[in-house]
Length: 74
Image 1 (cartoon, one colour):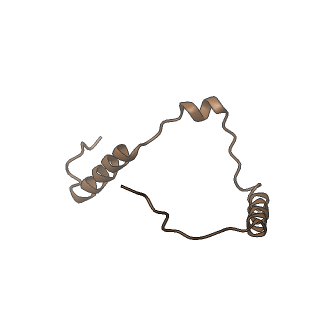
Image 2 (cartoon, rainbow, N blue to C red; image 1 turned 30 degrees about the vertical axis):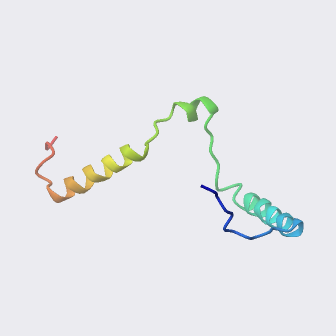
């Protein structure tokens, strides 16, 4: 089985430089808004939700909304 490249786009050096400059401008514009003060250890120890967990929680929420009498009142 061969894999043929179906995309025939070329990015010139000038285009790449322009996009890189625009990304740097955007990064500078958002610098004061996007501040994360977490250390590397804090980020590593945070709970993460994978695809399966996210799907489970989504189904649980929707079923709870459909039948509010199912979960315990406490």
